Amino acid sequence: DADVTQTPRNRITKTGKRIMLECSQTKGHDRMYWYRQDPGLGLRLIYYSFDVKDINKGEISDGYSVSRQAQAKFSLSLESAIPNQTALYFCATSPMDSNTGELFFGEGSRLTVL
Amino acid sequence: AQSVSQHNHHVILSEAASLELGCNYSYGGTVNLFWYVQYPGQHLQLLLKYFSGDPLVKGIKGFEAEFIKSKFSFNLRKPSVQWSDTAEYFCAVEGQDYKLSFGAGTTVTVRA
Image (cartoon, rainbow over all chains, first blue to last red; front, side):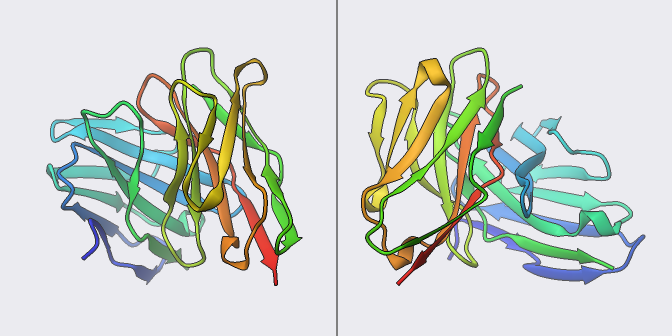
């Protein structure tokens, strides 16, 4: 089983719908991140959390919200999806006691907004 | 905040050719540097990392990278590529805020 699990893996939705992408991890890491990947733009940070009570905006947080329900769970919500949010979304984790910054990624959630 | 620039968008080469991918970053403080690889249909995986010590770091699958502080560069190299090295490669920089900033990525296609 994957250490970082994302659901759903693929989702097609319509403009204006609310969408939630979920991420759970069994690595015991404190830090969790949501990135989106777009061709030619690489990965851009949406939100990150260093523990259950800590939520921080990344570089492209507009139109998104997150919830850190537990150490192991970090969900990303699109309150009203729009077509330019069509992208591949990755959840990632890293341990708090490490200063090397290595991230462990989930398999990705491909979202298409029509 | 830090930023990362990767010089090449798409590189096409034949098996056994040498590969070098450029990466430059901008950040005023101490950084940790990474190369991640994404094979087709898969998630990103760490290829190698630098955070102190010898500026020439070796990673998995025969890859290496050299940190040149004066040039703010961290170029990735492999002397002889294989078809299985076809992937997208991302350079990333971590500043003192524990957030990684990624470059736009370089797609490498190796022809048999």
